[in-house]
Image (cartoon, rainbow, N blue to C red; front, top):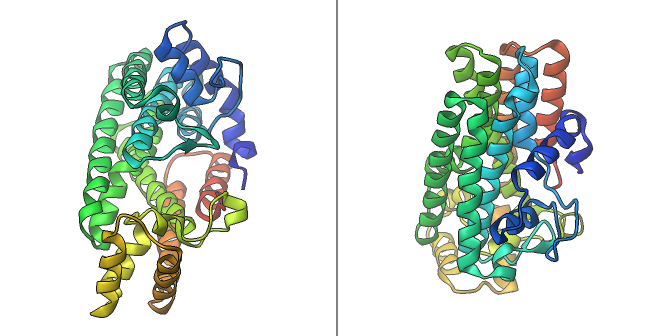
Length: 331
């Protein structure tokens, strides 16, 4: 499902793109790499539009406008947030060994790991200086979320050497994924000058969306349609990712079943026959049903929070529609 042409995301897309172009203007190598990673240019420096969905910055501007503020006042914070998200992806691709990002070569495969680290650091620095245009409170919010996101990535990496339960997994997701969604809503509220109580509820909304978004992503990583996603069923198993389905499967497995999971996820590579065995094991343990229930539970929590917050009636409808699409997207 193409979210880039849906409702509120499309409304703010041009504004976010213009802000990113202005922020990353310059002839330096790191600025050029940043423009490539964002999708503003191809690897030869030619203009491009290979963007992501810009979900987080759009939510900043949407929330600011819905809460009575001016989107232009929140734009520096929105651009800063997208740059934080972008720097994390540059570093994630290195850590995970991912060679592609949105169908294009990852930064590290073109410029090397060392320069890719520099480019990620550059985007982080530019993000903070840009967000300063929305005021001190916005900088503090973005810094807090960035710290939480980095902690979440560290937790995620630690899962490579151990199995975790649902609570530990969700604690990681609340940082790695949820922190930036929470930040998006909070930055919009800050831009509109709403009370601290409302900002706290906006953060809760972001956390719930982050959980639903990530769990759905994990579902697609095991059972997604290979033709629609550009990757075969069982992709996350093949990469030995300790995703939400794995946490549930390990908790439900007994004896030889646990030994099987431990053996597969301890190996340096996973054979296709082993991918099929793990998928079959998850089916026998009814894991997919529980994963889908997890998406529904956290989506419902997010939808309930939208109803409680002071969005307009039209705004509530748009946001609820977006949440529902995120929770059932095929990519």
